[in-house]
Length: 235
Image (cartoon, rainbow, N blue to C red):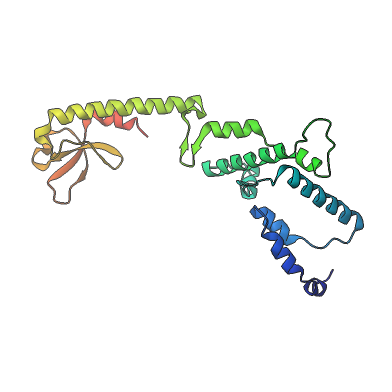
């Protein structure tokens, strides 16, 4: 069918109306790419699918595609040997949740129920439940991976916590024993290192590495030598 005929039929308005009902970006794209069919067998098959879809909605209600994500870019990266970040993995999980809902929606009420023209489409949906379960187990949010993601990660984080506790214990001890030398009895961070704020006149009294200085020059932020090794063990 040529462009003039489509324009005369106001086909663009039909497509625009159809896309309003699409629930996903890919669904919207597919709607916009639709062209009129010209083969009677394809037309009859499409009409049957439409009729069966209406019947399912009448009996079961509408199906939700909320959470469906466009993973084409992520899949391409996987195909060339790249890896996915936390956000992308959560998007995979979200899409698999949607697939699981679709799979459940497509199931017949009982084994003896006769399928319809949509049954093969629902049967082809694979929710990859073990993969989705593993993603949910390992990833807490877009910023956090669970300690249980792997034994090695659990070990590393436990070691970090123990080392951090040792650093704070040592620093608290130093703060308590060097109060006279300190501007404030606090522990602070400078350049990713734990330090204590030493008065300029007592700088030589505290052995360690100077990481910063106040704008007035009255305070030096020193990493006590006693915890340098422990600080080095932290990432």
